[in-house]
Image (tube, rainbow, N blue to C red):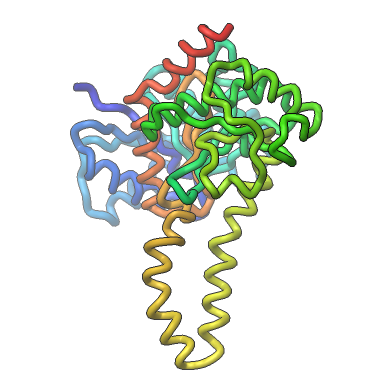
Length: 336
């Protein structure tokens, strides 16, 4: 069986290339027979990092890219001004069929723009979408969109639902995902023009549409897939990302109030970390998929650790092996 080839942007993230290379090594060691990893970036820096780990893996290779798109760079301008960047070179490897997927913890806007412009959209997709995973009382919920498409039409929310439906079926084995439309009330009549029009389309879609859901329902597991425009979705995502830091800060502040409080926190924190906080840790999920493009792109957090990078690689491998894009293409063809 041929190995699945995953391109890793070795210059992406706050701790590049250290965390990117370390995560790639972990993934390569765990799946030597099924994965081939291509590290893209400044060759000397990558080689130096590999030497530090004192490993020689046959399923890791390097493709040089002399330029780096930083977090401060303009996404669209930098793609033109830095054609030799790790993002451009990596995406081109997927476009040229020399690799199956691309993962990056670098400039999110640049990764999205390069993926859409160079790989193109799947036929029938007006707007690609980014989905983010949220832990719930009963498992997981994915919200689409969380930032790829800020200004949407009702038909785009329908597309997000179709793609999210297939993703949940393929990756998380949910046989009939419950689809919810994020709104300001559960009643069909609640919402703005966008949600009212989207409701009508989703109701006729043939999917397991359960109607409107509210913000409080995101973590309650009322729906498996929740759709909204990228502006609202991104606000929800950034709010959720802050929860972990706030909880940790509260525990630290309480522990500093006295010796016995510190002991109590020490006893409780281990359980809390493994049972509750783990579900909110982005490292566990790696990155978020950009759905609707002719290829597989996984976008990671700028602070991605080696474990997060490893999980990004595994997520990309799973999307390729389970033919998520092919299934999206087939479903959109049926709907058209």
